[in-house]
Amino acid sequence: MNATLAQRRYQLGARMFTRTARSFLWWLIGGSLVTFTISIVFSDALEIGAWTITASVFQWFVGVSAGIAIHQVLPAQIATGLTRREITAAFGVFGALLCAAAVLFVAAGLLVEHALLSAVADPSFTLGETAAQAARYLVVTPLYCSVGLALGAAEVRMRPNALQVPALLSAAAVLAAACMWVEYSSAWSAAWTAAGIALIAAMAAAFVLLMRGAPVHPKRA
Image 1: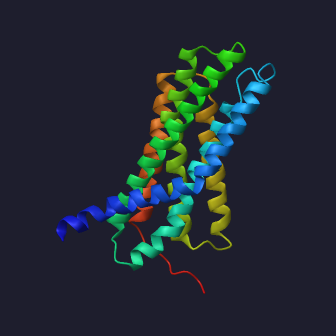
Image 2 (image 1 turned 90 degrees about the vertical axis):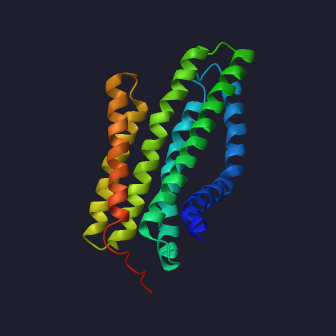
């Protein structure tokens, strides 16, 4: 029994990830095929390829999915008897799996696109530069995910009203700008890496505090 109770947080995190992955599977497949087609057809006009755009848009799906998962799961799981600590750990598992899958998806897309462009045109980036661009998402994707989790937890805890909604939207706008700065900053440096990791740590800490703070407000009828 104790082993079962100890594992349920990890099982919940894994279930949330598989549910999210299934919901986006066909969108990802369809979007990938469309993106590769655009990259090949417009290879002369799109020097950087189309996958860079798709990868950027995909980060928003990661962040939004993380926030929506909190809104959907948190009240129901507390009602079934899971503690906040267990739910926090479950979302840690969910976030780690989501980020790992997203980074692999983006990296695979960049490498496949490079191979396709190499076959039909002369890509503007070398294979090494493409791999370096993919590696940047080891920082970018967890940042979007952690921001989504923190904002989702804040929305659930606050029961937004006329005063809190503008504050939440303002915070979301500032954090979105920070995410885009990290993502679109062209310089790969120790300062860039440190800034990204610091933002991820701050968002993770905010998420944990929000999850373990005041009781979750019941939904209004």
